[in-house]
Each structure stands twice: as C-alpha cells, then as structure tokens.
Length: 284
Ligand code: NAP
Image 1 (cartoon, rainbow, N blue to C red):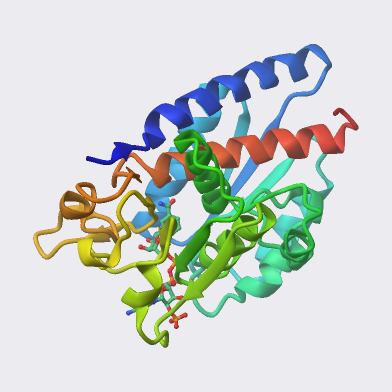
Image 2 (cartoon, rainbow, N blue to C red):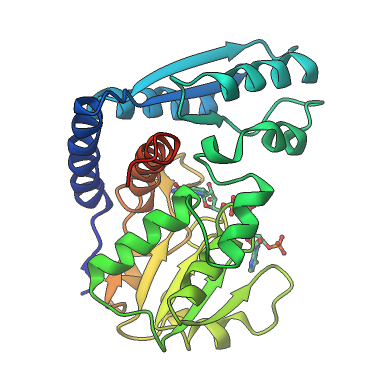
C-alpha cells in the first residue's frame, strides 16, 4: 500500500510557520495584508474566496474582500486594482478567476503589480519562473513540490511525467520539476501512447480534470502519484484524476482527494503573501 502524502497535515505545518512569521513581522511594524477581489456570484468562486479569508484569519493576515457585481466594467475593475497596487497596507492582490464575460482576464492580471501578484500569474512572474529566478510560485505547483519533499523522494534524475499543460498547473509544474533536475515529460490531450509514457514515471502528476482518469495499469510500481484533480463522480461525490483505490495499492506514495493538493494550494497563498510583505518592506 502506498504511503499517503497528507496535504492537510502538511498544510497545517506550513500555516503554523506562516503564523509565526506574521507575528514576527508585526514586531517589526509590518501588518501583512491581502486583498481578494471577486466579481460576480459564481458559487465555486465564493467558496474559494471564503476559504482564503478563513485561512488568512487563522494565521493573522489581514484580508480585505472586494465583491463586485457581474456587470462590473473592465475599467472599474482595473481602477480598483490600481488603487490596491498603490496601498501600502495591501501586500498581496488576488483576483478570483474565472472572471465573468466579457471581462478580459489577461489585461486584469497584467494590471496587478508584479510584487503583489501572489498567484504568480503575471507574465513577468511567469517568465521569472521559466528562468529560475522567481519570488513567487503559483500556489498549486508550489504546494505539490512540498508534498513531493514530504515523500523524501529526490526529484533529481527521476522520470517525471505531468499530465496536463495548463498555465496554472501543468506548465509551471513541469518547470519546477525541471529546476530540481527531473527528466520531465508533459502530456496533454493530443499525446499518443499516454500509458507507455506514464508507466515510465517515478513521479506522476495528474492535472487533467477528468474523474479517475489515471488507472492502476498506467502507474509504475512504487511511483510518487500526485493527484491535482477536483472532479465529481456521476453521483456528485468529489474525487480526483486518479483511481485512488486501485492506484494506492501499486504506487509508493499518493495524495488523496480531498486532503492532498487542495489544502497545500491554500497554504501556499499564505506563504506567498508573507513573501510579498517581506519584499515590500526589505526584510529577508
Ligand atoms: P485545464 O486547464 O482544463 O487543463 C487540463 C489539461 O488536461 C489540458 O492540458 C488538457 O490537454 C489535458 N487533458 C485533457 N484530456 C486529456 C487526455 N485525455 N489525455 C491527456 N491529457 C488530457 O485544467 P487545470 O486548471 O490544469 O486543472 C486540472 C484539474 O486540477 C482540474 O480538476 C482542476 O479542478 C484541478 N485543480 C485543482 C487545484 C487544487 O488546488 N487541488 C488547483 C487547480 C486545479 P490540452 O491542453 O491538449 O487540452
């Protein structure tokens, strides 16, 4: 049976460290602040934003929510972000995606000050990840790297396979594994002979968005299997991209859903916000 990589417990440890750092920063006169912008009334976005606020509260980060109607114009949203960019009490700015149509996400993200971009979605931060000279990492891949570290398996020299090439998960994930000297293959919907490739993986990251897509016959015995998916079975039950029951009998390490990557993603946002506050106040 695979060792479970417990995202909840790991995230709790990260949060304890963050809370300590927040307290330390307070003694230096720095109160850490995060602005969370939500446009429209998408129920999933509402849940994510509420969770982020709760997480901030738990570690002593001041969070301010800006709720805007779905009919908000591009100009109104950009004006708000520019105001937040200029506020010294706001260290991080997060715009909950997706934005309702016809708002242009790209130009909204481009407006966020690079040093306050705690999601690491701004093209400058994306480029800095590419060259390995970054301040912020996108929260999901960063959280996954911490979970791989918990396994104790060194990435260097390993065959790493990432299924999915989205800008927020697959691509940055591949880059982080490459920075750690993994031999990385990125698969996507046009990949031929997927199983042949995944069977080589010492570290397999599934970010597909399809319930139980990765089956036991696609996994190398003893592999580290990271399940990013947040999917629903026909009966509405939450599950991941990996057929957990079968794969956990073959893998060496596996992340559960829920309780794996999800809590780590949330914890990494807090870490990035601390980093932003330190950078903006010239604190190491
Ligand atoms: P996405 O933007 O929809 O990307 C999915 C990727 O999977 C695409 O690159 C797509 O290939 C690839 N794909 C689809 N069908 C495939 C197939 N049959 N074979 C191989 N590759 C295939 O999704 P995402 O934003 O990366 O998210 C992926 C999953 O992770 C979703 O379930 C999402 O909810 C979840 N997620 C979880 C967290 C968390 O914190 N736990 C965070 C973010 C996302 P093409 O590029 O060719 O279309």
